[in-house]
Image 1 (cartoon, rainbow, N blue to C red):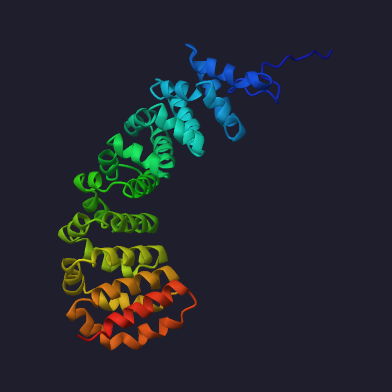
Image 2: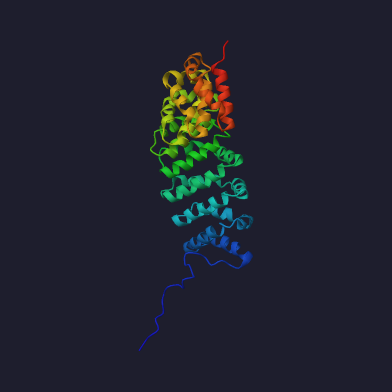
Length: 341
């Protein structure tokens, strides 16, 4: 005789890891209440559900209005990894919207998120860095990170973190240095970026070169690049197989060689002229543009102009380039190289 078997499993349409959402405008208040519950399982299910719910941009303003950001801020120090991980993921999603970034700064969430930089779990650290990087993408957010004195910490983490997190840190520093370079210089960022020029990953080499260019905008940065031997390492990257690496390396040299010290370091120590001339015909327009600008800087030195006079015809060919910016740079380069006192 057949018997009915009652399964202990949930029906397939019920997810036991997530809190069932309340109807309509009661959904977020309930989730926010459960985020502060003393029971771990309730907090886990609530933060999992909230993370899914926030992927709809329409729900973010509603969530912020009832204080969800403050609740997530508390969960950043939760003893449970899942709660910390999903809380940072929620904040990352919120930070992808202007209203979310404003809330981050207004409620002082930047510093609590940064404490997860030291979390023992890679995923929690990655999510924290993703959230901070997202905030840094606006000038106001980058200034908030600078004001929180996080730049030295980020520079230090570059030598300790995984490749994925290194990329996030380099991007965060890129945006932060657009509003302030002093903290990065004092924290030894130029030395760290120079070390990363030898990294196996072309993405990291490209971003490190870009960050050297950012850090070399002020005079102190240009001098520091010369001091820590960044120039010879950048010259090596002019022959890199990756176009972004070549473009950023040429851009960094362009910035450093604005000063007399930078010019002569590139000409004498770096032997940069011939590698840069070779890039004048590069297939990528950004590489051609930055190479021409760097050569223009080098031609301002008599020694550089003397060598470049032998390459004027090659540079003149770029005056008919399909990219207007390259044409302009080529015309300026020819004018400076052929200048006579």
